[in-house]
Amino acid sequence: MTAHRPHHACGALLVAVLALASLTTACSADGKAARPSASRAGGIPAAAPADIERIAALTDCEADIRTDADELREGVCVTPKGSWTVTTFPAEKFKRTWLDAAAMYGGTYLVGPRWAIGGTPELLAELRKKVGGDLRKLRDMNAPPVTAPGSTP
Image (tube, rainbow, N blue to C red):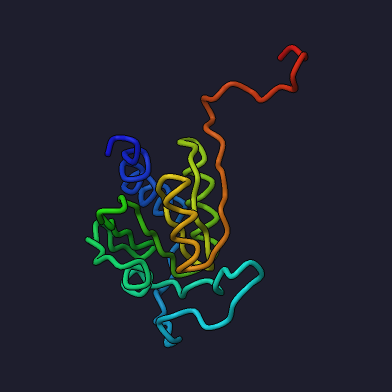
């Protein structure tokens, strides 16, 4: 469970970052169907709508909402398969700001339109089959630089 702590611990910090950036906008409801209908290459569905409850339902969990702010909503799913954090945003600009701030922690995220899911890479690959999105690996700012074999940093 501690492997997921950076994803959970950064929620409040990211809310503060977004609030300090004075990024405010009203949340809009998405009236789209709960299940993604179109399919992309490789059998991956079109990305789910930016709604925690819908994403949770697609992944067979009931999300525990931890943050409900103007800039983002965050819920935690805990199932026998593992646990993950679902974060939704009222606009893409909030997601971009959140991902920029999350980069300091590193990790892999499943990212869709106005949403991001944090968890283990293996679990995210499974969730992707249900909710769509793209896997993104964010680099930890404290990680050593990546060097080619045989070169010096």
